[in-house]
Image (cartoon, rainbow, N blue to C red; front, side, top):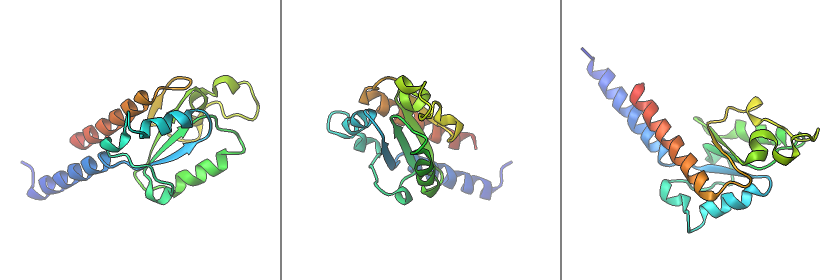
Length: 153
């Protein structure tokens, strides 16, 4: 038999996770051509606002980082600093072939070929460049996973 406080705190936790999932504020890290597709996803045709995604320009207001494009070794320390300044819990979406595997520049010595070595990636949007609808699908899948996690806790 469950104690009443277990039920009460379980309900509060699931409500908090639902609210967190339905109001994700992404920090846009548009580093190359995938940034145009990310901006397109925020525009009227795909409209990420209806899913609760409001792009923020400050990492202290964001809880989702969308890495869109090529990451160079020179840019990596700044990217990690932005990640550390984000709110907890924080999530990361890698968007595009360059962010996932280095893309066309994978053989270059200045390009990070796998961002997952430095950050925990929660969702991946594949393509070069990926269509904006795929970014919306990744955000919806991440939201579903956050809500489902609260049901198992």
